[in-house]
Length: 296
Ligand SMILES: O=C(O)CCC(=O)C(=O)O
Image 1 (cartoon, rainbow, N blue to C red):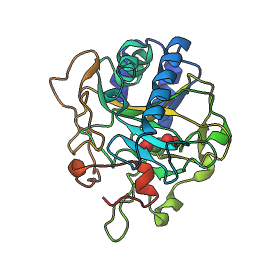
Image 2: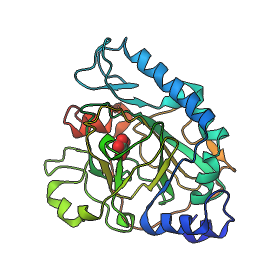
Image 3: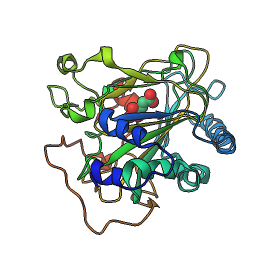
């Protein structure tokens, strides 16, 4: 669906001006949106994943670990596809009011693509460099967004998600270095075309939800504070947006309908899309990629 068509459908939880600002700026922050009982369930599920990671010595398809991770002092960077690890994460998507919010920005038919739980551990949790999501998983149209849930309060020191307003309407940047290596971020020579002074950092209390279009330039600073920053990220799309490259984070729920019904027709937007590496051989995480720990 186009933004114009989506805006014609009556809203469920957002105001019309919130919806319009998402389409104008390419992002939205909805503070304190998730109820406490869901936060409690999600926090318990996250603690359980941290406990599991104590038995893991090296990054694998599920756990992406900081180099100093140990059983005594776990330092998780990411859990890939958390829905596949604990049903709480999937139930959150299909049962909570998050689905209403997604409908307001994607239309009545909403589909799951991938999920990840990014930790950004206290005292050194890694930065995420400026990048767009579209080069990682191009779709037939741009009704694709990443929805973040802050499980705890996230202030400026915890490395909140940062976005460049309006950048979703601009170019799709190269995420390959000059030698053809996939870096997973915007190349240094191109950063001059992004006005970093316009960056907006999406801070908010526990239960706040961030939403950014998959073309929006975004990133986050390191977390040097004493408090960790678990951020649950779900990538979802309108049902008529079809991915045409391999999903870097496979999931048993890939392409499952969260709200509404499957599309009969695929919708296509015009223009060029960067083709990512062939992820069928595996993928670790944006952290490992951007820190130069993983080859494509
Ligand atoms: O965890 C973050 O701060 C941002 C993560 C992100 O942009 C990504 O995983 O694509």
